Image 1 (cartoon, rainbow over the protein chains, first blue to last red):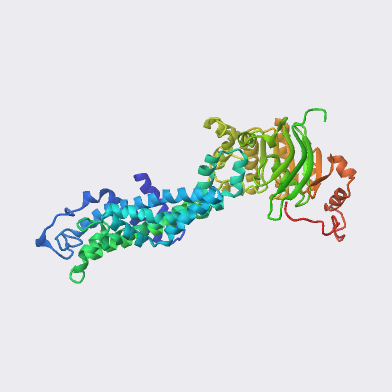
Image 2 (cartoon, rainbow over the protein chains, first blue to last red; image 1 turned 90 degrees about the vertical axis):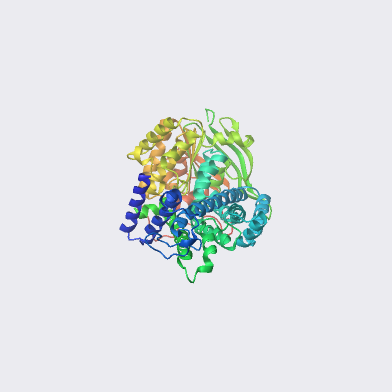
Length: 289
Length: 281
């Protein structure tokens, strides 16, 4: 943990030294804080996020309740801290699942024959032609509302973009001279794909996935807000906003703080994605040294 | 040839399928390489010299090959793909033209040099030792540390040494060098060719050098084959080709080599009749 922290600190320092906007360093810091919240949030939360106390309902921010309380008298700060634990893992599961499916289908399409490519890409096109949020809405409604339904629905709808991207990237790299050179050395097909083609092809895809963390998070919270994702008592950020939206005029804090958490997290991951691209690409890294 | 040749190519024909029917680009090449011998395959762009060299390793899946290509008595055109893979990089190494494009940008130099050994089951430590020693032998300073660098951290000449190291680490009997010095400046060119010759002598390795540059053939190869339009037009020792070329094309090619003290205002000789030229290589 300390090694990573030091590494990040040096990274941030290097950014500033090279007069790259400070924003990226700040974004990384926010992302780290959110991950830390997901890890230790419940331990540092001052109150029980689910304890209803109607006498303390809708209290404005104070020393006792930094972010105020919601309509049921629950501490908003504690709920926001818990929310990281709900929203972030759900998002990562969606990203991981759709990356695996997308890369698999994209790679098979790019390296397989013409027929395989056609069939897989037409299926992908069907997936792409349906707006992800509408499809996810229908699917999670059909599966029964709940966070796991939202996660399954989103995973099913999110992969086509990755499949397209992975196919294009793999096609580009598979004819590169160094892949040819490796083939000339007698490198077997499997090693060729996993050591030479994929590592070079997927650099761009990693960036896309990190950028997508923000987008997926928003959709999950959006689905929860509409009512087909996480259900109301849950401390999921979207569900919290949905639950307190009626009190927005007289108790802004119950909506604003989870909203702010959502906004900052999505933004932070977007920026970190961009930063990772620079770090992962050896040719750009040289210039940054 | 008194001894058995290492490589014997007989009546090699290469064609590519096109929508308008097969297009033949190599029309019957014969070639012999004795063990330890250095032969240059010379010709202008589009003469079929690269296609011929690539055909020896069956590198183009689209190419239709006919004739015989015998390496150590085995006809490569009849080998199943698995055996062919063992030949590539094992018995025959290939040095590419562009040293940057033929290195994997996200793999360290050391790993890339080790790879031909690793896929043949050599333990990692042994492979690493041999890779570092070979890089050192090829003039990469501080190879122990530089092996952990990435290709972009190497200069053009150093990258070509790495590419050569990759091609020869599995100790092939034959090295095919496809325009290995075209991307390099003249001084680095000379050094790289010298290294290739030293390696060949040390290991008894044969070299087939593909080039359009008659200037580098003289000091490097023992014999040369001049190709044009997919046919060999002249074969002989380098001395004979330089001092007594028989074919008019070879004469024209030699006349096109710029010379110090030559009349620079003289227009270059026009090679071949108009309309006979073809595109592609």
